[in-house]
Amino acid sequence: MLGLGGMMPLPQRWLSAMLLRSGSDVVLVDCGEGTQISWRYSGWGFRPVNAILITHFHADHVGGIAGVLFMIAHSGRTEPLVILGPKGTYQVVQALTVVVPGLPFQVQIVELEGGDSYTLPGGLEIKTLEGDHRVPCLCYTFSVSRSPRFEPEKARALDIPLTSWSKLQAGETVDIDGRRFTPDQVLGPPRRGLKVGYITDTRPTPAMPDFVRDADLLVCEGTYGDPELRERALKRGHMVFDQAASIARDADARRLILTHFSPSMMEPEQYLHFAQEIFPASELGEQHRTITLAFDDQDDKRDSISD
Ligand SMILES: [Zn+2]
Ligand SMILES: [Zn+2]
Image 1 (cartoon, rainbow, N blue to C red):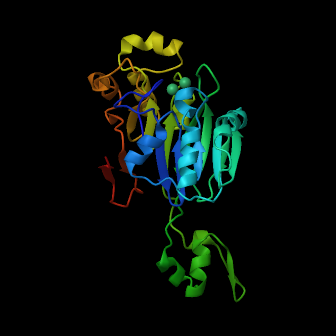
Image 2 (tube, rainbow, N blue to C red):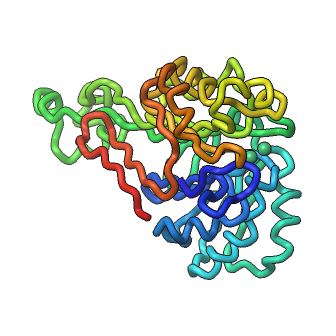
Image 3 (cartoon, helix red, strand yellow):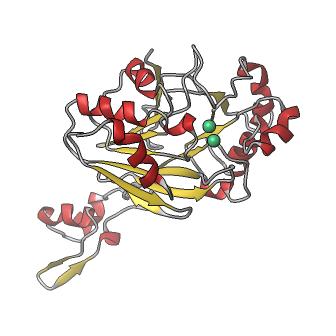
């Protein structure tokens, strides 16, 4: 998490943004003013980023794009970078990048609608859902699929030569001496992958739990903590903590991280219990904290705060 604030950056609180890495894919989600400074504090490099995702075009989510592209250029990146966002992203990015001409890498712009999917070069799969804000807004999920386990004892029992194992493991069918073998003969049951949801600047909608169903981690806005501010939140296209927690609960998510705090809420910890009463695994976001998610049978779940 690079920041946790909504509306304006504060001296101790950067605007909400997240960096996410999966294999060779590194994604920045949202890019308000000052994101490049918080990014530097985080210790994550600029060069590997290959995608910037925008939820919507309010300044607290896009105002830092020029500065971030400038930093990525200075990091030595020459490989292309994709910027994804709702309809209108092309125009907004064109306007914002007038002040950073001559970038040494190609910027590809992709406009998405709710329900679209996009796969990054490293295999990270992105899906979108329309939010309900005062302007068009997209929620995102990031998924890593996992192939079934290869079961050598099955391959041995079928007398499949070792040289064909990798093909079967990769999902290919092989023919050996007139015999045909298919991957399902040597692979185990399907395995759960990993999923992260990112929902901000939106009222809760009935489609959200299904969209982030079974997420390992849901990052969701809680612009206000006090449930008494529910009306204000709805009017401004936001949520209070317990509404975010209800989405996490209804989605059977494993963990919820709250973000996008209003500048009027200086002590969000006062209100965390409202979320935890509904979804116990609710936490407040922490700036520059890195969370590592592992597949279910890999015991290396690690958390760290790198600042
Ligand atoms: Zn915002
Ligand atoms: Zn907004």
